[in-house]
Length: 345
Ligand SMILES: [Zn+2]
Ligand SMILES: [Zn+2]
Image 1: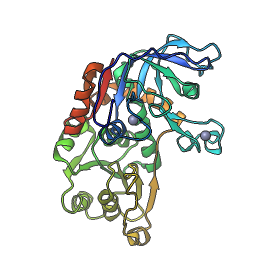
Image 2: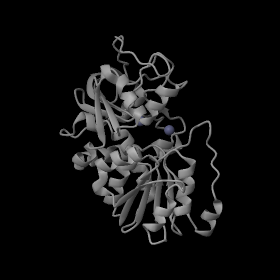
Image 3: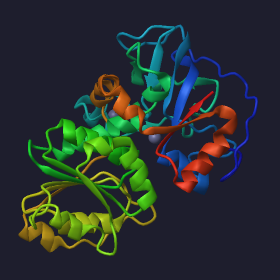
Image 4: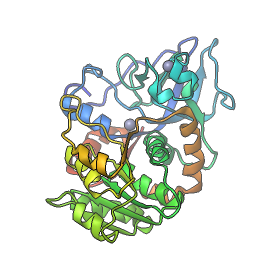
């Protein structure tokens, strides 16, 4: 990225190995909504010219002489790098909630350049985030471990019981994976909604087999259909995987009494205050919960999950681009004609 909304392929100096870090030879790196937002709107944490890319899979080409590798990881292994960099010492890290680390930073953002490149440095703070890959899991699919682990965190917070009706609002890659996970958790019915017909159709092409029905959220944000599909009672579990105030409010309106609602997607940082009908919460005894990022435990679980459900999950990776065509990848995201994209250097 050479400026906001401008990209160029340049010959960059080879990254140097930190004595406590390592070098990855990148095999694949995912593009996520955060990258797209940064590219289209700019971000002070990505000062141009800047190399983005925070969902890398690569081979550990070089390891610093004082570096500590996580158990089961050796030089020459194929690994995934989890993007949430944590201090490892604060209360939340010690409790296993690395996603809530008091001092957490993100790989791919200042001061750590990312992995839309042939080689990328692993800074010392990221060494504990290296996760070994199952030998048969292809690198392009393994790049989704980062958003996939976050989707898993949302589903764990949602706490689905066998037979629950689940509504997922937002049919991007996260919503798609959560539909698969909801099914695996024993949901009775899984419904998917989105404001965008095209996105919903692409999602159903990928994970339609896991979904009982889907609808485009119209003027009432999809509340009427949710009630219709549940005999007027409303769903017991709702997850909002779309950064939308209307979707947050719709979730409260469609919720069954005593339902659990998870706000997975954040709102834009400059506009985070949402007017919500709190009487829905009070009179229906709702639980509203948040979910953010993923823990190290969830990253590890993810590798297993990806391996087990490889064929179904591969359908969510709709586009692969060589590094030279990364500009085209961002255009495809802008046009909304795909789900998950991966860059292959
Ligand atoms: Zn991401
Ligand atoms: Zn911490």
